[in-house]
Length: 408
Image (cartoon, rainbow, N blue to C red; front, side):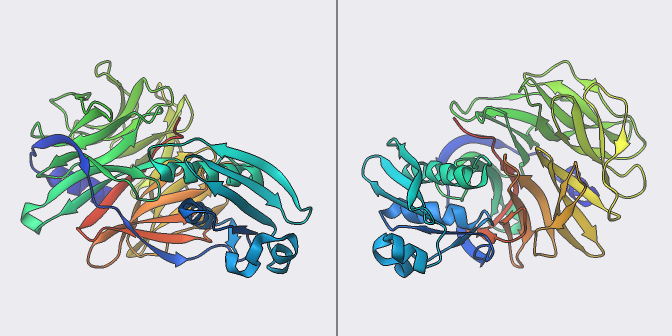
């Protein structure tokens, strides 16, 4: 946390150029395929979108995907011989029509139609969401989007782009471009706006940009360095970290600017706020000597420490009871997912320099930044640690991911 914040403070002023243009798609490398002990499912090859459905289920860490060639013809006997518990069969035309079959009974447990959509991959993501929810009882989060920052070009003359794409890295669009870094994107609860940090005024400030129109507004005090925006659940406010008498404290500001009020007042650095419900803010603070997670009320007061395992925990991302965080151990940092109710924890990342976790809205997957050696990449891991993929760009580094809420 401290390393990231200090790096932020060293950046000089930038010129931000709002734009909406195509960007390079992220490439996918599968580190682990699927959960060997997961629900055994086969997706019939009924069209190009079947592969998208299969890939979505694969990265959830809850399914063991069976090669459809092992169940040729998709007859009940062939499916049982292949070891499938469920099968997805259907047809693809302008719409996507499919059934989810319980192989044991031979009966459909759901029949669905996904209407035509200009982005055909979204049809497949919606289908995967339905299959996921029908089997697990948890709402699917494949039909969502991610935001991230791309940095390309020579070290002293890089171009930084704020990019929005489908959750699997396809259909990327550049939302803003800068000659100096932009960082810390945060989705509004309705998925229509992004808050982020920019230096275009000569100091770090928080801006909100409308994704449809490209219009933007500053929401932080131009006289104070402000970082780490996070939207309140009702979309009316942002929690931010503001330079305050030599340190950083947590403030809440109106989503249209104004009404800024102080929430914390410590002698350390308080940063990286995240909302955990309508009246609780989780943040990172080094007030005890090393960064740890703390929580407070949205009106201030009642502060308490939240993380206790490990000497360094930072950068919370929250969905329901699941809290993803950066845990540093010696010279390495990894992503840990903690259940806030049971306090059970699991390390889900596999690198040595993993950072900036962004949890899916259903809490079942975590997107994060990782150092793959020559350049920064993104990775997505299932919360049970059983599936893992790398998303990388051939054009440069990608970093600072943010996972959108559910889409309409």
